[in-house]
Length: 609
Image (cartoon, rainbow, N blue to C red):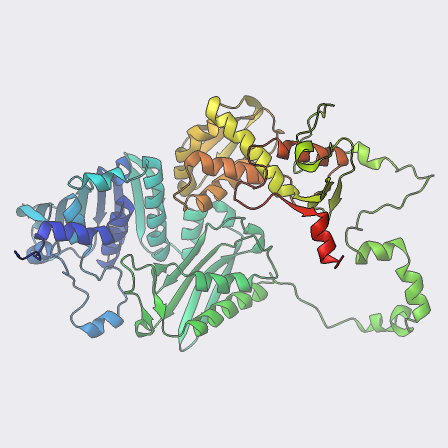
């Protein structure tokens, strides 16, 4: 038999290797920006065309390269950072693998101009499909100017997997933000299709955070700074009132390199444990500095996953540093034990609290209001009370159900339960569940999951056939977004319009909400869109969802009646009828059950009957 094993040609091997490093335009942006930072540049410009598919160009005023170094930089495994294996464990620079430019040149057309300060002229090199096409002298300022054109021009299958321009731009903004946060002393600019998206003057870390993440954090940042012989941690965390319902503005840097670490994220969340609801996420931008020998950064092609020598120690240190910072800036609750001496002389302190007094006080409505659940707003029944119908004066809160008129037609739930909801009593349990009697026992409905399913199917059907009816707002609301959120808005604006939200551009990073769905209450437009953007960031990491699906799920979650909201009997019956009129009544949009059925036989077994 003939031999079947042979060596791949260099250009094919390079393309395969490039797949590990360059997955999309944002990958090239990351590599080129990190190389510019390593060159000692103080001014770095990023220029993009067609979301980086047509052009990614990085211009810096760094140290530049000699003729030979410029040519060598496109060879695989070419690096200026490592001379022996020990160097791999003492790395403090960004790009060290020696594969960035070689990988880019394998899947794009590259033009490089570079010049050192001690040279009269620079070097110009053209590379295509890993092959140098041209090398000649060029007049240019000190530094490096590298342009990557037509990404994946020679691998069309890879190019077809790229997302929309808005989606690819958002990935680029993410990478740009990480590099810019790590180096606030450098001037960064970013231009897309001739329009400048970022202009970040060199300054402090706090100034850079506000520039990138929004002015709302300007007075809401708490300084974190702890130093030990083993490691240092510096940076900022947001005060609890800046926390959001979805993950977004959380950044960890180890030796100035951005990393993803669920383990350390858990340490931060533990530090905030008593200050935030379980479903809220705080802002943090934290820098850990330690001996490079104690951390391995070479465990993943993107270098975003690392291994620590002692993970438990790092975890404890991060958690303690944040707790200390929050306490130091009076964010955590504190007790004052230095009581005024005169207080100790009050009769209520001096006299004993007898059992008789305890019984008398515990029977009062005031005591019950403070000690029993769901009693804070309880009003005792009284025939003479003028407040018997006080609830009737209040309209349904925006978080509650919007009730349609309930006709006398047969309820869609009758087939499932054996009863018509108009003929039986339903009641609310723990301000979270609805109990519906059935012929065989009873059905327990989760009110929020059920309402999410109802709203989800309504939005889903509206998006299929024709756009939802939009009502023009009497007083249009202006949105000031960060550049990152602007990229998201451009990605979802058309789909929002199909769902009834009319959002129009109004200058750089600004939009005006001109209309909302006809069946929503006015006055809450900005809050709705803010949460939509926040939830979209969370959902968009899951590639199985389309843009419209993400938006519909986000809106359903946002508009659904929440746990803890008291419903009237009429609202409960309407929700039950609407739920069983759905195509998939037994599960919410996220797959969680909307109701559970308890049959008499099952209940009897539970009581050994």
